[in-house]
Length: 305
Image (cartoon, rainbow, N blue to C red):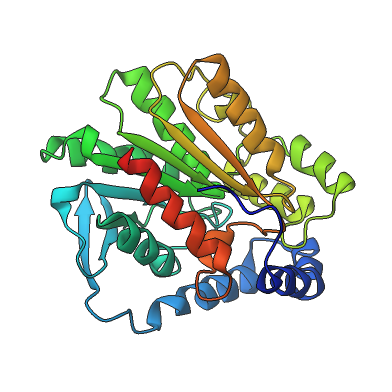
């Protein structure tokens, strides 16, 4: 499937809405206090919607990390599984907020999706979330799930956790998952790439100031150039085939481009897709824009290849 050359009318309207209503709030965002509690509750309310008929969801725990399995009608573990690390700036998001995206991936791939509820900042700073993701992966392996039946995916800050987990797996000599999928990954924790890009094209959704605030909540006094955090500079040799999808309106687009360049240098099979007119993690808007559904269909094709 080829990436569309232009944005759909629905995507144009969605971008305009976010530029007018969401970006001004993002410029003032601070992940603390009542604001943080409110956005956590608002996003988690997405999980209160009744799932499509035939969907199965059940809680599970791997290590000390709880989470939820989401399985669309017809999906089977016999086809493999997806371990999806949700986004939310390391400070919000959960297995509730991302059930819709997980269902979409499960429906298209025929695989159940596990959404771990890793610990979030500022209550739990780095390396809590990264350690939780590694614990889930290791426990899946210990319980007999073959690595080559696991697709690892992540969106936004979950993209950083995905890259961090791949680095951890590499350094520890653990077996790699079969594929890696990144949706609008946030990878450069210094904030330099997003700040520069936003001066070139103003992001309708994310604000570099808000990104930096989330970074500070996650890292505290830690240096973003530490080995586990500097994921763009990490050794990519041994990584699985990787798909990267990003919207061309995003201030994080250069994060995706640099990830693709580092994979190219390591001679890893990969594909970078820049979707015109799409906002941050547009794949989550499957009930609004056709590109979201097209993108997830491509993910299914990619992991079957």
